[in-house]
Image (cartoon, one colour):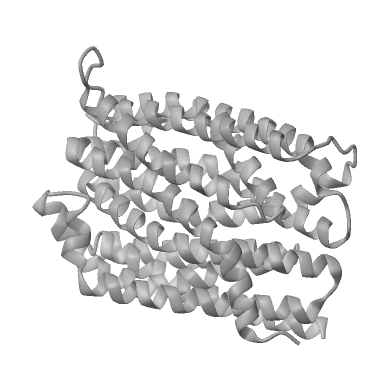
Length: 433
């Protein structure tokens, strides 16, 4: 019988590099927001609205690809040769990328009809067009990273992400503000920079994997069925939450671009802290998946409860930090006094949300490792679309609380989501006894 400290150390051993890489990945997005905010509030508002839609579409494929590490870790527990599923995974990722590209391109004609401020529409449409072709690089990177995580290879992929923070920031400054023969391109420069960085990360990680592993091309068609069985509900769960957050940008963007910019800053800030429990959740998911494949349910439960506790502690500390220095944190993104006045009061709500956000990602990781993601999809659907958005819309639009109203709806939904998922998990564990 292993001590609780053993499980903490084992999760941390895998999670720490993932944590750094995830923070690096978010810092790439933070770099976009900071550079956009320094360029102009209009630039920040335009990319806030554009990414609110494109990221939702991109999340569809990324959510499915996230099932690769869970499925392959289960295969490893079952003593299957998981390395032979590399090329099927690659094929799967490229098909999803093509579908996503078509979805993004097909949305461009609809932008004129949404009701955004006219001055932002041309910028948003150009951003959409460039982002559509970045799908292949982004999905390649996601697929290879998930494959490596299934084999608990996490250092190189995440060191690469850290390097790309600086690459992306340099390209952002170069293309957004211009230098020498390169003209000032504003928001379009951000899209070009993201495209270059996504392909760079994907290709480098692909080369690394081909050198490190003797990969194969397994003809087992049940692999695709397993990916879809685990990935589709998980993907819908991610999209449900993602769309719920980003629809706030769209709705508030129709009121004023400053609210869309404020929501982008707040979600970017929460995304930075979210990457720590997300790393714990990924590590826990792989450990739970391996134990599930071996049918070692005692070890599975220990990893699950340990990972859940670690996420709760970390996000409680993050909430305290945010509560202590709200003005400083917002000022990192913008020097617009009106924008700061909108953001700072809402951070009080964000502090409470952080804890439940950490719990829900840990719970999702546990269910994914157990190949039971339907419960995650259903609880996310109820929480964000039957609780969060209706309450947020009523408070924000009907009672004129604006962005604060929507965030109050989000925290209520998060409490319901975590409570429901914990009840489902306890019932599932009782059946495994």
